[in-house]
Length: 233
Image 1 (tube, rainbow, N blue to C red):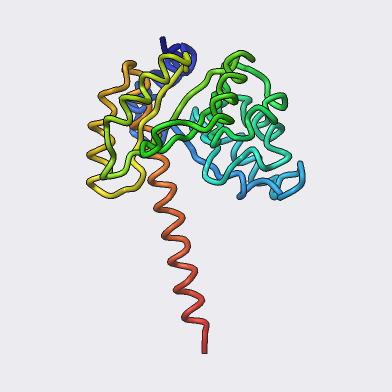
Image 2: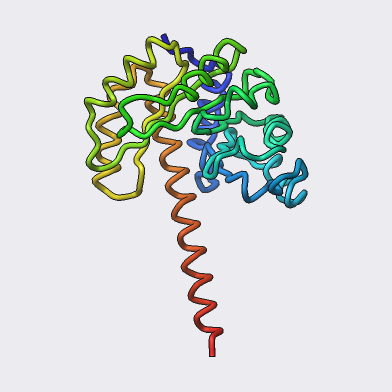
């Protein structure tokens, strides 16, 4: 049975209500950050203290750490603790290093260890399964996020739903693997399989923020390439 994160549920409801009665432009409930943009490879020190301060002060209630594998960074535990003050932190990993690194994190109510699992995968790796089990036994909230492609087989997601129930995973997020219209439609259809209304709705927020972040990176790369092309003589 999925656990409902009561504090997060209440916090997000308050933010949504405040947005309804506010004249300010709507903002994301979730801010995504790639650890490679913040942490030095092989070091506990952040790349930019100014960037760290910006994340700590970010008004979004949820900080999503993902993109590149966060558990390969030595400073990820300190990073998660630092931004966890005042935020809910979702740390997304492929799960293979979870058993090895889990001792660096504290099982606080605002920390969610999230394993990314593509819907095309019929089974999980044994390391990811053991990582989820270790996280659960250590008292962490555990979540699985499934990426849905436009050609996804929803029967496989049905198998995953059974796995989530058997392993007592707390949350399940289903999001589109890309911004393609067909993938977004398929993900919306797949979300009907999530038994919890909270995790269905939160999946939509996660999808919106992560796709927007990906589009921003693509725009940045395209702009940089264009600028370099103009500079070539």
